[in-house]
Image 1: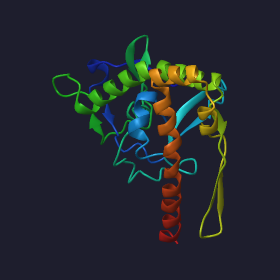
Image 2: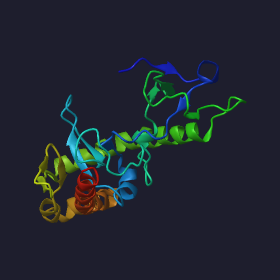
Image 3: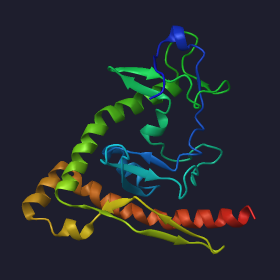
Length: 226
């Protein structure tokens, strides 16, 4: 955990935020309420926290670590997940804290406070993102726990071949099992439906088709850089 300071105008009036911070993020955590929006543009898959082994959901934005295929000069033209928006900011005892040493803060970035000490649009976006994560993380953990309980999450094999002869295999990713979904009892299916889980499960499973688009993007860049 980086060194944190509670955010206030007196201490951070000169803080400036780099909004073009997506260029090296290839997998960005999302919460359940974001999935319908994010899934229109990105594949949504599950992976495991390496420290706890718990599943969490994320938007796949690159096929290799450190590369975001959707970002142009670090900017995402479409949906920016809350976890990306709040980069450099954290919740600490119910208040927003900042990690001033985070590379997202740059001298030429967008100011966090205006001259009157009020939150700028950049900070307002961060505040909204923190609200989304604050309510969304526990909701998503509960949803995933229900998926695990019903054995709906399974490993997914993604192997991609490219025109230059290279091959990429994406490891450690999981998806919703449609076979397991369709095998649910009526009682379980009704419960998941009423909770909104079934909608999320089908949206997540359908979003996998974006992988093909990402493979085309990478293939085009291989030859553009040649």
